[in-house]
Image (cartoon, rainbow, N blue to C red; front, side):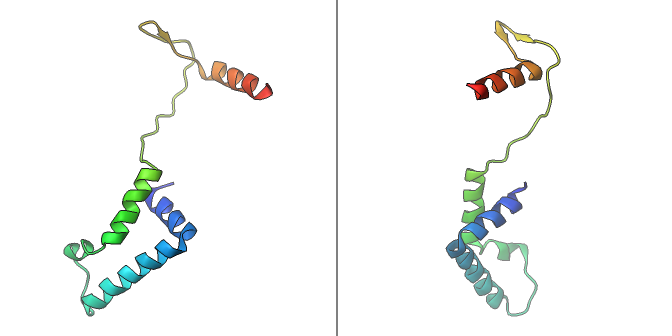
Amino acid sequence: MSTIGFCLEMLAVCPNIQKRVFEEDKLIQENLKGREMTYEDLNQYEYLERVITETHRIFPVAPLIARRLSEDTYFGKTETETHRDRQKRTATDRDR
């Protein structure tokens, strides 16, 4: 899911915060008095910015590298697990 998706989810779960974001937007839209919004106008969304920042804190953006080892690999003295070995170990741990 994207940051926007996580923000929308958090706003749906927290109606009081959703109301504050809505009220902030309503006030900013009223102050525009019919003109188009500019980049500078976006700086007025202080509460929304805090919501986005908090969403990033709770759901940090991290790159995902989806690779699986097909054979054991060594980095110095450290051995990595293959995906198959990890699945076996996880299944064994669940059975306990």
